[in-house]
Length: 119
Image (cartoon, rainbow, N blue to C red; front, top):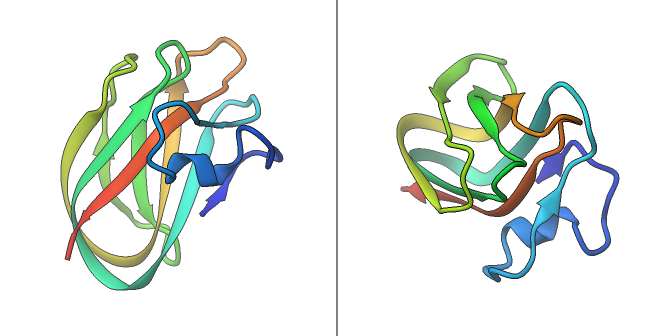
């Protein structure tokens, strides 16, 4: 995963995927944040699950094909710390989640977990 942060310590990108409810990835501040994922092979993604820290989320996320820049889907997360599920339909081997309308005054994003489902 490529993310919009320089942090690799206690808030590094690996913590989005470690399955622990006690760890998280934290971005730097800014107008928008991005998480880019490279999949092992072209896959059909049918669901995205994400958990933010309330107060450090985004109200909109454009999901783009990283290579073409095409917007494959747009989701609208709630400013909440509960796990949120979004049905999507996309076939890709790389995608970027581009978060805008950030709820934190400084534009920080905190993600406790991020999961993709499909085949």
